[in-house]
Image (cartoon, rainbow, N blue to C red; front, side):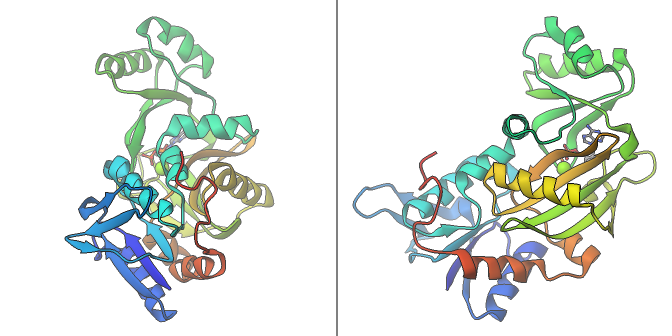
Length: 301
Ligand code: ADP
Ligand code: MG
């Protein structure tokens, strides 16, 4: 198959592993920097070009679109969808997952367990907002943050008030969330491919830190997940419309809570913690599933 990997850097671990897995399984991978891919939007013959060259019709596209290039990257992916390529994850699903609030609203609608979360516009409503999520300590998050940047733990009501006020003053979009203390700085990353959890790891924050992101110094280890956790992760990926997802769960007193669903989960941490060939499983999924024009939205949304 002709497979394009939308990635800005072929040296990144995940990109390298996907190239390797394609080659091992007899496919022709091409790495495209989405920012150097441009397109002709025409109803008769839509085209995509890359650095002056007309691109072929790919059988499948593997999007690895960085958070900072979501807008342009999803436009490029949508163009390939219009041209009939099979997207590993659809552009619409990626856009949804990049907005933490939108994701939580979609999950809440289907009864998935979530940390109580509030969202408000006016500083006048801060007091009630804090009360709504159960008071301090609480977590304040930028809607489009990633890698733990933009996630703050406010230990007291006073601290919460001033941080929320400061963010609102900067016109930053934030949500306020119940702090799940009993998770003790750990979360569970479940890697879902085609409706199955194929690998899971526990990430533990370093001492004195509540954020377990590996980019923030967290450490990964193998974990056995419960049937409820497995079911929650699979359901969350399905609701988001993602074939491949990194679903992050917090273990709480009231069961597994979904914290976020990542559409471009990194492969390095999960492959080294579990020893599994996740890249190979992704390519295998594409082999089994890819068909021309097989999207739920046909590049519409
Ligand atoms: P990012 O997209 O930046 O990774 P997350 O929402 O995943 O943002 O939060 C980063 C980390 O902070 C999580 O991995 C988790 O360890 C911790 N965290 C986030 N929200 C909560 C919460 N409500 N309760 C406890 N810990 C949290
Ligand atoms: Mg996260």
